[in-house]
Length: 116
Image 1 (spheres, rainbow, N blue to C red):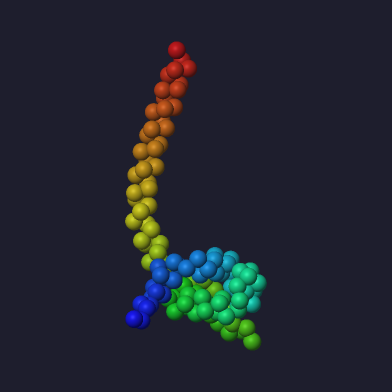
Image 2 (tube, helix red, strand yellow):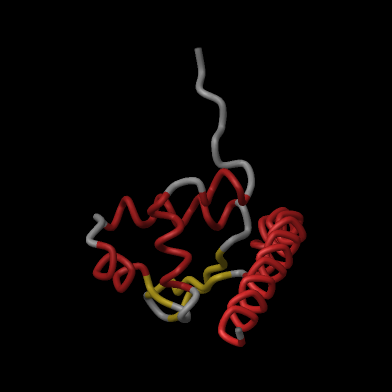
């Protein structure tokens, strides 16, 4: 039985830890493959394979400069992940607000206890 493709979108691409590592490195700026190899301790074919996947799903772009191919992060490619996580932000904000209320109550009780 053939395996299903696992890298059809940004979510599946970033599920692989080495690809996330490459994205973090490229968030600092444009880099050639050889620099990424040195920064990750991965073999060049492995880095190239991950970069190919990241390109296919639109998370990185590449351009040729002389004999080098330079890769850069494509922030727009991360938009679907950002949008998905943003739905949880509302949940977190509600919980942080509830925590703020509890902390304010504790602080008020503490101040009240010190005043007596």
